Structure formats: structure tokens, C-alpha cells
Image (cartoon, rainbow, N blue to C red; front, side, top):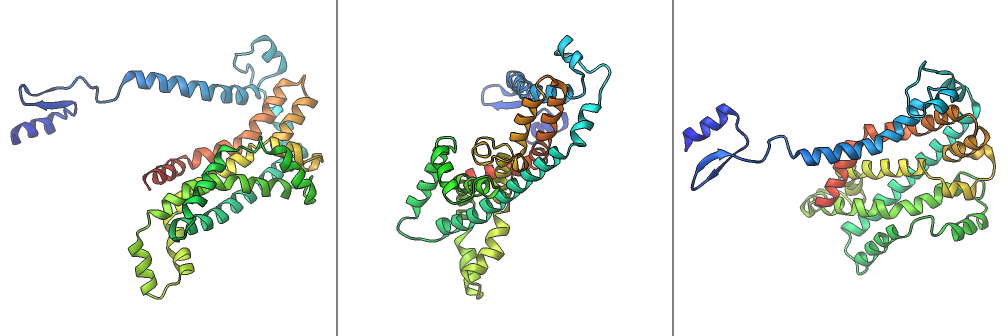
Length: 300
């Protein structure tokens, strides 16, 4: 048996399996995976990536190139479309508004979400499970369903046509997802660790700051990134709340720019690609943290 294992290690035959009747023989399963899975994965990637590449590459073309050859490559490559957008003060103003809304929403959701999740996960009281179920049920009610009463509430509070009128509702609608992800993280922290901290003289608040937050950073990073990207792409709520062009976020700016330059398709594509690049960069850089955070939440 040892010699057989030695042969397997020397030959590197990972796709061998042992049976009582025939001993070791080659398995029909390919070591690099199923080609059907790879094929459908490549098709899915192509379907998702092709529109994004078309928008980015289309910004380097002229209107005549797009009209004559809609699916062709730029010939020659034109940079003036992106230069016009970058040199526009409107684009940078809308970019700043989107950053304020995205960062403000992310901070509010993460801070409030981790505090509520800590109470639900670590404290034992009568309605803890009911409270968690209530927040989980909030995932079934998107903002679009409540947009009319939400607009009335924002207007009655005097927050219409302000960035705060976007940030506060987005924090409220972002909390259910955050709590659903963070509660399993906090529940997976051993109870013995909390008891040892209390014996060492650490209070509940000290345990929260010194132990809970560092241990739950994968989940915090996941919820923060998802909240930022969702806030960056939000369109419905800013459309109802904002009425001044100086307060527009980038999704509204793209719609307004498309309406004003409906004939200039190449410049519209350049504006659209620049508007979505920050969210794509953020998601690409932190995609491993997002996957790791969601995996930890499922395990918890």
C-alpha cells in the first residue's frame, strides 16, 4: 500500500481512485474541472462584461464610427470625448455629491448595523429573535415600493433637495442587509472569550471595541462595500428628492447629460463610463473581502 502511494506521489496522478475490485485506476473525472461548467461560466462572464466594455470603448469613438460600425473598434482612437467630460465642472460636482452620499450612507449603515447586530447576537432578551426576523423581513421591501410615503416624510422633515434627504433613507434601507450579514459573525465569537474579558475587568463596551469590532472586520468590510456601491448606483430616491442640478448625483447626471446630448452618442458613452468606473474599481479591489465576508456569514 505504501508503494502504491509512493507511485501516486511520484507520478502526480491526482485523478486516480481506489476500488476493492480493481485497485487503483484512472478516474473519469478530469483534474482541471468539468468543461461544461467552464463553458457556461465564460458565457456568463461575456454577457456581463461585454456591455461594460462596449460603453468604455465606445467613448473612444466618434459619432460617425458608431453610426457606420456599431460593433467595431475605434479607428482611430479619440480621446477628446473623455477630455471634454473630465474638464467639465458639472461632472466633478456630481462626483463629489455621489461621494458624500456614498460615504455618508456607508458610515451610517456600518456604525448602526454593528451596534444593533451586537445587541441581537450577544444579549439574551425575550424578543431578540423577533427583532432579527423583523430586520430580515426588511429585505423583502425595496425602496421603490415605499418611494411615495418616503418622499412625503422627507419633505415634511424639511430634507427635500438636500443630500441628507438621500443619506438617511438609504441608511434605513441598508440596515436589514447589514444586520443579516453581521449577526452570524458576532454569534460565532466564542462565549468563553467574552467571559475571559469580563474576568479581566473589561466591560461590555470594552469587549465590543477591543474584541468584537476587530474580529468582525470581514463582515464590516463586506457590508460597507455593498452599501457604498448600492448608494453610488441609486437613482430612484435622488430623482424624487433632488430638484436642483447642483445637488445631482452621478446617476441623475448621466440621465441629464444623455438628454442634453442625445445626438452626441460618443460623449454620452464617455460620461457613462467615467461615472461607473469608481464603483467598478471599488468592487474589483475588495471583491475577495466581499466573498470572504459572505462566506463567514453563511458559516456562522
